[in-house]
Image (tube, rainbow, N blue to C red; front, side):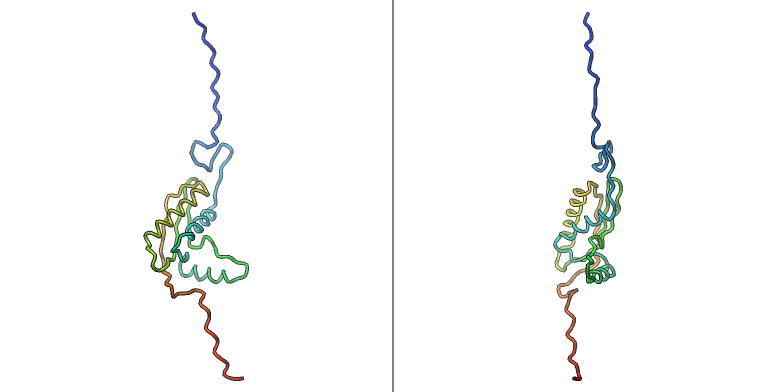
Length: 157
């Protein structure tokens, strides 16, 4: 008759990633990312794509042009960008102005690739959708910063 050999108790080490599979949750804590952070990442990523002239509707662009002229102010990286952020996913809506001559369907695909890549890489959130709303077309002869006409010469001296 043989004697059973004692077996060592099985030990398991806790996984650093929680069972949900999210990179933002672990046994050591949870990371939350504000909507504004995701909006800035998405806005900057979309701006990197050639063919994007600007963001936002007419009123937002006009307001942005005014605030850019104020010393010390900067244009908002999230103008024309709205996001919905959950615990593990994000959805992005972009309102853009396109340069004349750019294929809009190809531009939209490039924007989606860039935005999804940047948001997922920087935040760990899964991007479920990127909606692109083209609201205007910038023509080459439309210059926002066109010089003001020279004042007329004085009629009296």
